[in-house]
Every structure is written in structure tokens, then in C-alpha cells.
Image 1 (cartoon, one colour):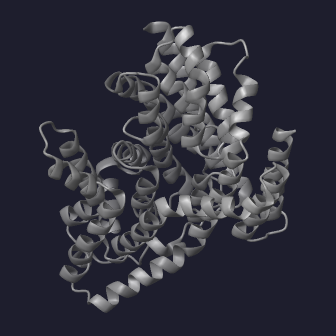
Image 2: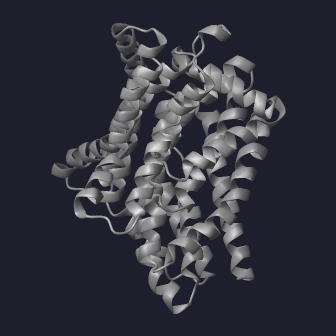
Image 3: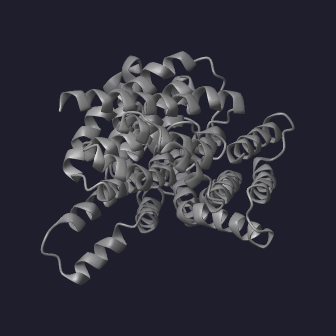
Length: 437
């Protein structure tokens, strides 16, 4: 009965947004409240669950998305994105531009959270799309596949790192095996799959695209790349210092503070205000106007993402994930596949890859120990499952839909299909590695 309620609520949400064209945020609120009531959350706690879900997801993303949008708008308006796009096109050529974007997404995806990587790469993608008249999904989806796979498979991202600890796996081996599994998943789910989607109509947000400037008006290549990738450099630097030995308490606390995504993004914005703003001849009021316009452009996206958090929290508070896991734990099947399947089903119902991974860990751990399964591979199997079936209760689904300005059908055909492809290829890679090691 629980699964039927969850599926019915998800179907209702799709109908409200697609068929009746009701604002996605309002639809999320209505469906979240209805789901909470039907799933047995006490009436006096339903609203609190909705509010907590909105607060939790926005609390972790609002600074990243708003500051990232400001920085992205400045990168576009200053001509830095145009310079980067031109440089990448010269380096890779139009024929191989996908691979250049994939490589960039993979490299920055290892140290960066998905949301940060997304907002940092969007200006670059859209500049390439508009300047060279290339299909947006064809260019954008491979990069997002790289970001998504690193988020689900590889430490130091939250879910893989937590799974390594819970399964008593080896962080280094998990990362090594994860890289082996991640590369084919990215290639198949990104460049290969996206070639089938060239005809999907997409008019990405023009927020991050400005009119072409003459060569003399553009900032230098070093300034453009350095500023655009500054958050990545800062995060990598903070991580390296955090992992170094013989740190005193004060130093450790400083780098923990300096490595926070919120602090990194704010510092990067302040620096870019000068490198791409003041030093390029712009006045402070002009720069602040650029930032204000950027906030207007992402306000609705923030609300929609908050709404997805409300539905996720209602499903978590109702205990849906635990019920589903208990139904599946006694199934007689290969432990690695079972871990993947449990994570995939919880991901479909709850929407959060992290929640799916961590919930699965508690269920699959006893079986993993008794069956003597390689813990490093179990981390990857659960991580691959946690990427499956992304749809309307996943914030990533809505980020992709709204930034690329797609309808629901095309979002399912592109984003949701890509997430499932990388999850399936990831499972295949894990099972193959299990036979070889």
C-alpha cells in the first residue's frame, strides 16, 4: 500500500506540472502535504516536515546557487566565458568539444559537490552552445554525466565517503575501483547517449550568455580560466591542507572553515568582482546590477528545488525508505546486485542519492559481512544504485529542466535516462570487477 501511495503522489505531481501547467513549486507543496497525510504522518507534523525539507535543501544550496549565478553572470557579461569557449574550441575543435567538456566536468567533479560544479560549468556550456550554434543537450549532458558519476561513486563526496566508513572499506581502493567504473559510465551515459538527443529543442537560460565581444574587449585567457575555476582551486587547496599531517587545532579549524563551499564561493565572487569587473573597467554599481539580475533569474529555480526537498522529507519522515528496504532485504540474490537494487528503489521513492545510499548501508551490511563481499565494491554498487531513476522528487532533475528550459517529457528522455544509464553501467562495471579481483 505504501508503494502505491508513493507512486500515485509522484504521478499526480507529473500531471499537475505537465498536463495542468501548474507552477512546480505550488504542485510540490500540494503533493507533499497530501503524501504526508496519506502516509500517516500526524496532521500536526505534516507542515513541519514540509518546512524542514524546504529548509534543509535550500540551506545547503541557496548560497551556492545564488552566488554561483552571480559569478556565472559576471563570467558571461565580462566576456570570460566567450574567451574560455574560444580557447576550448581551438584546443579540441568542434568535433571533439564534447570530450573537452567531459574531461573538464570530471576533473572538477572529483573535489566539488554536484551543485557547485553545475553552476560553475553552466556559463561555459551555454557560451559554447550559443557561440557555435550547437545543441544544448548534446554539449551539456556529457558534462553533467561526469559530475553525477563522481557525486555517486567517488570519495570525497558525502555518500561514498560515508559508505566507505560504514562498510569498513579502504578509501584509496574504493577511489581506484571507482575511477575504473566511472570512466565507461561517463562515456556511455554522456557523449555516446547524448548523440541521440541532438533534436531535443532547448533554449537555455540567456542569463549566462552575453553578446559577442571583439577580441580587444575580452579578458585574457589566464584571467578567464583562473577566475572561472577559482572555486575549484580553492576547494582543492583546502582539501590538500586538511589531509596533511601534523596540523595543530587552529590550522585544522581554519582550513575546515576555508574549505566550506559557502566560504569558497563567497571568496571566489569577491575576487571575480575585481578580476572580471573592476579591473576590466566596470563600475561597482554596474557589477551589482549584474548580480541583481542573476538573482532574479534563479529565484524560481530555488523555489522549485525547495519544493523537491519538501517531498523528499515527507517521504523520509513517513519511513518509506525503511519499509521498502525491509521488504527487499530477504530476497535471495547476489549481494552486490541486491545492494544496488535496494538503493535504486529507495532513490526512486525518496529522490535523494545520499539518503538512498545511507539507508541501504544499514540494511545490506549484515548480508555483506556474512557473504564476505568486497566492501569497496559494495560502496560502488550502492552508489550506482543511488543514481538510478532520477525524476520529479530529485533537485537535480529540476535544476537540469529549468536551466536548460526543457519540458517534462524531454527532461525524462535526457536527464532521467542518463542517470539510469550511468547507474546500470556502474553496476555492470562492479559485477565485472567482482569477477576479476
